Length: 614
Image (cartoon, rainbow, N blue to C red):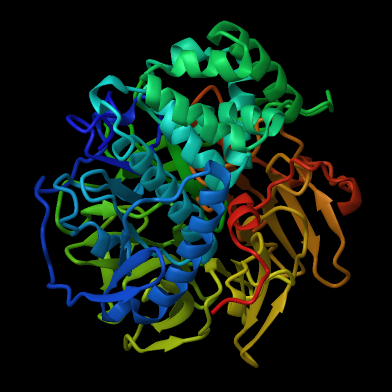
């Protein structure tokens, strides 16, 4: 998918890809069977707007209209920002899930679950799935539209395209900046580089072809856009395309060579990402480190799920260049032994383990573990023996395009999970005895990370906050909400700047702990439900994070004795364990004092207006 040159001859498509490590290019695209399989025929329809031909099928019938409105808003924003109008109509091809998207014939290559959109050059077609969050879809859509504008600028201005071979950070970083502004995941990458004195120069970034071209490229363009005006982005890109020389364009407009640009960028990035609070610690200073990097390629240990007794931890790792589920078990001396539990990517049964937005769930007796894997055309809920990995039950649903985060009821006879229908996520209740399925919610808001509490309440994250307006397709950052099974009501729990993710119940149900970038760096907080008091439990300068904002990164044992989280340290994700009794619960800053750099959905702020839409 990603190539070393951005030319018509060798670069046919650009994609927004959530790669896992700086060195995982070698493993991306590994699939059981190694062949793209078409499981169904798509009955395509076309919905036309001023600038787009939107291709959709029955499952995306409703969401196609919403996507078209977002696309037109994104087009208007990019046209103004870049000072350019795309010559021809843009084909926009929509899929209802990652599983359907993986079958696309727009490109020939295999698509891994980290690929969320692709734009190919020959016909300037933008192709992407809708994966349960309009907020995230808007970001990916605008990112891909940036590529459509880039292609049009290059290919329709009498340009000798073979002369223009820009570094990937130049095109991908630009797409990320214009679609997301600056986000806390990118700040985390930059901060990690600064902490470890390893933030690369622009010259070195020129020869980089992995995830860092997205993250560091976004940060670099953010420096340019915020200091010289966002319109400068288009000016530099156009001049570079005309001249075939990126450095010349930068020198002409910024009056800096690449060495000077590196110094200015690093200084600016440090002011935005490195906390002034010198008391903030690294994870290993306050918690027991459970995982370590085993090799250059083994950099991912994520999606922790701690057992009810706090003595075992299930997680996903890429130790052998395949995503697999491992189990850590505590020994009498407090150390942990590791056992491989489930292999991903080596059989049709566990074709692709889902972990980007989905958590694993334990039964309250600790005997069973539930998780999601792609198998054939659909996602499947697997319930396995937590010791042997033997499959005990599996569930697949014809009407659901995707499945996320199964969580057991207290008695272990039911599951709640997030299911996708037509790209929209909702809560579903599954009876494990008879397989009966009941839909609990039905709206356009994102419904992710459900966790069943001690009684009849389910906490989840959602973008249905007070600043959201589904009719106008305006969606807030993620907040916590509780669904009450007794009366089928939803109550918002938090309304903080930034996003809250990975909610976990206290043993008695009186509190919920969660990750929030409330103060600019994602850390663990807890809210007391009877009075709404919020306190910060960790103050980590690295932050508590998974691969993306919505990758589960925190788990709290049902007995309350163990908290396990993932943190990004030295360009890798590692797991850490702490006893909550050892944490000092601090009162965080008030919302009025939160840094302007706190996590915001910049893609929405940029490309979605509050005007009434047709």
